[in-house]
Structure formats: structure tokens, C-alpha cells
Length: 314
Image 1: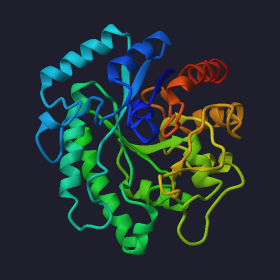
Image 2: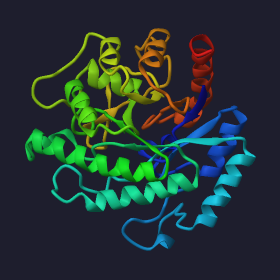
Image 3: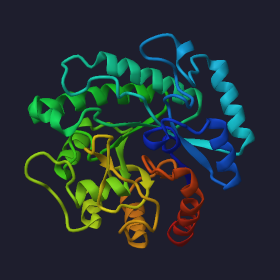
């Protein structure tokens, strides 16, 4: 089992004004003996380029294969690999349009980029907030998502890639039955769920940002059992049963506190996840998204996951 961490923890939210350069991230992860990094493929970290304008004005843009080959060489020198890629698709429409061609086109660019960097998994989400279901009926919306992701899975298959949907409170279809319904509707061999333990708590137990009547379980163990066989990728981090809030104080998505600052029992959760998941690539990824002290917390989180892997994934 290999351990990585999401690079977006050092570029968005509290870190947007002073992002950590990618080479600095690589150096730190090498020092802490990580196996790899999960790439947030948007500025200022490496990315396939500007979807709407000149790449020269897009920090971290790597439109050329030579640039990508050089990045692969730097990663190899550091003894690191990429565990996955968070594709920058948030500027596209998915649910409130009959024409997902721009979304699919941008997915292809990210898939090509991932293949050039030998990244095995492309992460996706439903892009738009739960409130979009006040504008588009759920059946129409679910059909649009499933059909678009079927097309994306076809593209990913061309490059030998998997596609993993990270469900979370901040995006549409965050109820357990909805998650299963859309997963099963996509029905492609290279498609599965990305289970983040903080999102699992907030969607499956707390019911955060669910529209209408809440749909929850008494514990994540019941939720994980429901998703048995559907999980393809795992993000590990604690939960304090709260959401991160934006500058206006509105709930966005799960807070992602470091291990020990929340309520989760990982000696119970982690083995249950390993039993329910089909981890084709053998990665587990630490996710400190939106955490203000993510850089400082990286070392302690790595130590905690090392311990969990040693106890439960030998």
C-alpha cells in the first residue's frame, strides 16, 4: 500500500494567497518518505493549461509533452509517483445544460495530461452545488451526469485510466441512495467512487447540505457497507462534524481536520474501507483540503497513516 497527499491542500482556501510551490511540496514529501502526491491540476501547480485563454497567463501550465516529461523526471528523482489527479472542471457546466461537450472536451485534456504523467486515476465531482436541484429536476440532472461520465469513462479507457467520483456535501447528489444510483447508472468498468472519510461522515452520517429530507446512517460503517464493491480510491482524514465555511460564513464542504482533531475511529473505519474497496492501484491519499495549518500538519498525518497501514494493510 502506497501513501500520498493531495497537493490542493497547499493551494486553495486559506493557502490561495500564498500557495506552496510544487517543487517545495515535492521536497517536503520526499523528506517525509511519502510514496507520492495526488495532483490538484490547477494553478499554480502543474496543469494541462488554460481552458479559456493563453497558457502563458496560466501559472503551472504544461501544454507541451516535453514539459510533462521533465516533470516526470523530477518526480522520479525525488522517488515519488502520482496517485491521481483532481481535474480542473469547475468552470464547466454539467447539470444545468443539455450540452456537456465543453465539460467532456476539458476532461479529455486532463486525461491526456494524466496519461503523459503516468497518473492512474482522474477524480471528478458533479461540479455544481446541491441547490442546483432546485432548478433542474433530479431525474434529468442524474441522467445528464451519468451520460457525461459514460463519455468521460470512454475517453479515460483510451488512455488506460480509471475515473473516480468524489461525492461530498458541497456538490449535488450527496445522499447515499443518489450516490449509488448514479454510480450504477454510469456502469463502466473503469468507473468507481472516491471515498473520503471526512465526506463520508458529513454526507452519510451528518447529512450536511442535503436538499429536502435528510438521508443518513448511524455510522459510516453502514454507509461503507452500502457502497461495498463500488469504492475505487480512498482519501483519509478526520472529521469534526462540521463544514468549511466561505468568507461570507456559508457552508461549503467538509472541514478536513487533521487526525486526532475530530471524532473518527480509524482503527474501525480503515479496515472496513479496505474490505469494501477495490483498490486497483493500491494508493491511500491524505486530504487536508481547506485546513489552515495543512503544511504544518502534513508530518503528523503521514505518521498516523503509516501506523494505520502497518496495523491493517500488511
